[in-house]
Image (tube, rainbow, N blue to C red):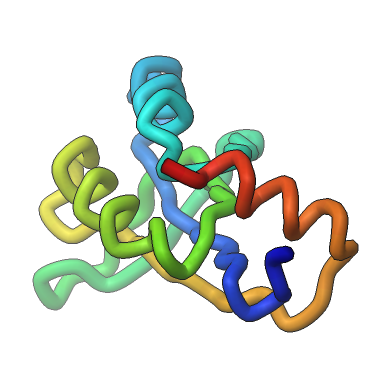
Length: 109
């Protein structure tokens, strides 16, 4: 049975004009994630190449396991249009045991 330390929440942002349908289909079909949440467009402000920038982005939250994270990170880097995509993984401290097990089962290869 999965425990909380095996489940990761992964955060990334994509350009507003990017069609994420093929990306999400790919990640799900390859069992790199159990679930993907796409949020409404946000305005992001940041420093890039020493200059302030602002862009409209789609925040994306992915659920995966520690075992699948390295492959997910590589796939996100390959699919992402940004030179340096935001990819942040956080280990889940607690969660509903049945949900954590579902994430584990959905990403098992």
